[in-house]
Length: 336
Image (cartoon, rainbow, N blue to C red; front, side, top):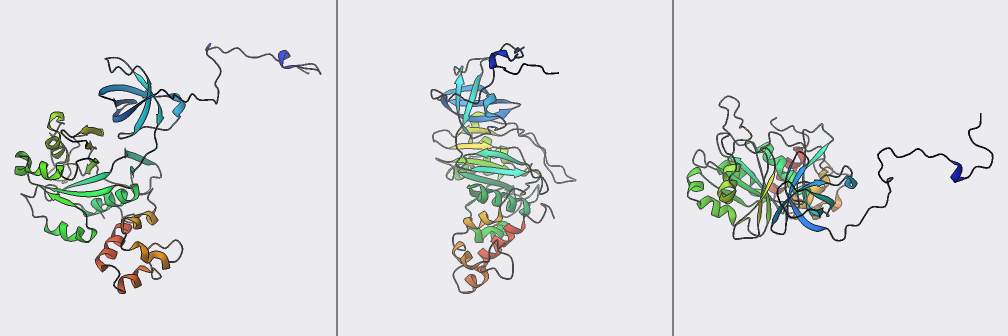
């Protein structure tokens, strides 16, 4: 049975009424040219705390952004109530292009990558020299993520009053990574904080580290006006610390235009998303030697041209060893 006659017209077609009473959807999105610029300071269950000029504004992601999520460090465009008054809510309508991204996966078998921090210039990898013991595999993985994401690494060693830093300095010496050694006493008298601050001025620095290494204690020494909870402890049996920071938070350094981003303690750092070919860019002395490598060279195989490059004296053999050790972390689980 035909529902319509032979000569139907658009006006003849019955349309189902919109029960919600709102306008039909359109693919045309507003440009929001008058939107204000903001910086995402922290994210908590769908609510984003942003800095707009000198005001702290609560916001939520606009539906038009779809599944695209904003993270700490993102520069965003906001509309709506930007007063920052209590119980007001703005909308994030645009996420600006990122200059760098620190990403991780839950483990090496997890294809879903998580963006930890956006637009950071530097990654401060905090490790204790004792209580808990250093975990070089985790440090290596953080280094690979930094090199892949376009962040410059900084190694911060804490609790030097419990153990000397010599072994770690020897292990990472060939990488030419800037470092700072601190102790509990130095943090109390601000000497250590001042030495760390020298590497932070004028930069956005994300702090990462295994739970219990004193990362949040260090951040509190750097930004005393914004003290975070530091009551975590290290389990005497497992050697693991308790998470005292549960969400990433961007904090401004006083008397400078630098920023510190404190992130939750990590117990693993998956690298399933890492493209090994990008890690070589962090080794400018070795990169020219890859011109003779076969296509898709892993830089750790018999035909790799880097061996001959190093043998000819173009680079230090320790640098090639360090590169291959870092690349191998993607095949080795942290803790193996």
